[in-house]
Image (cartoon, rainbow, N blue to C red; front, side, top):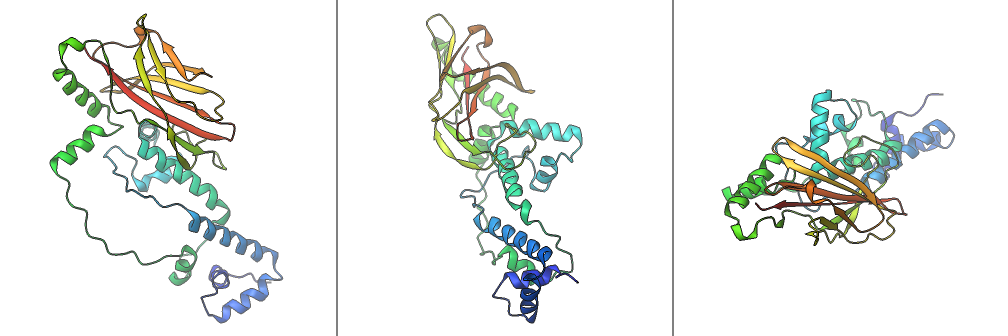
Length: 306
């Protein structure tokens, strides 16, 4: 018994396609378990595509971000080791690439059951039917950003350490001398980003088991000195959190330098004063997992004035 080819399965999957092949496919699927399983896989793919969320705001990528055409090879560990290491370190620090990688992983997990071998000879109208394509609306070209907008994006980029170091240097030059050795908050995101655990494991980009972003909650990040000269890091409680992972790193022109890692069930950490120095910038992260298997993470940045 010959099985249905992909075009016949697609014709049966879409009632809008009025072909004689649809009636033929219907009769065959009712008696063939193999083609019926392929048809179910096709419908799974269609459902995954139709329920995939759309980005509300366009991402503004930097020159250091993972290119879209390399994201699949990066997540599949198919890049040269040196290039993969660069992208891995970048993705851990870049909120945009972190969410892009998480979304790619989530999408692949949901679409795995619907992966079909679509041959190059498959008519385009059948491909369009299963992908539910529609003509893209004509949009005006984005206005060219001003020099101040470009400079602002460069300074505020979460990844390039040289940009952060440059902005910190400017800040230190103009900081008044009577506020020496004070903690200065710089670029803390102020929210916990919440992620689901995907159905399949993937490469580490911050978490080894993070999936689609679910939402955000207030992080209440705070850094202050205690009376005895130590530093207190505090944050808001996450409902159902099993504990909190704390990570502190120094920001240098060469990249982030790990300083301190610990775990706690409290919503604060008191660190020794000798971990930090005046005139330097630091990044700290709080992350963890809830009882409902939701991953959360928040990031703060601060510096000490000279």
